Length: 169
Image 1 (spheres, one colour):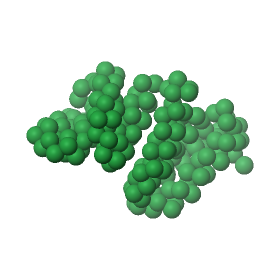
Image 2 (cartoon, rainbow, N blue to C red; image 1 turned 135 degrees about the vertical axis):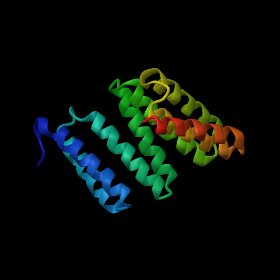
Image 3 (cartoon, rainbow, N blue to C red; image 1 turned 30 degrees about the horizontal axis):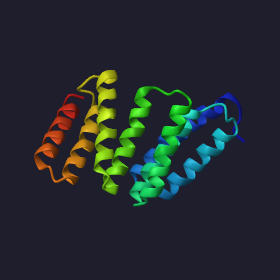
């Protein structure tokens, strides 16, 4: 029922609505909205590939909130694969790597988590500047990884560094 050049815009409108419901912990509504996003984008598969990647990311977040690491990882990987396939920016790929770092940390694969988040931080510093809040998000994840390693000094430093980015935002 949604066709033509407006379909990606519809999907872009539905995505923040899904995120709003996610913040209200209305995960069933999020699922319904993301199903609608996918149906909108399937009506015109040549359009909205970035929007489809964002839908995978949101589904990954919801899966993690439900404690489903396998589904979260699957959704984040789908977003990364889509981003790479369409030649998305390094920042989009870095965001996917940051999401996958969180999954790797939760699984206890701290070496993988470290390498993914270090790459993401390097890309974001290069493109956004060292004091950008998105760098802070990744530093927060780096702190969680250090905490999982029981490296409390490194965790505290990462969290403090993240706070500096948020204070300057």
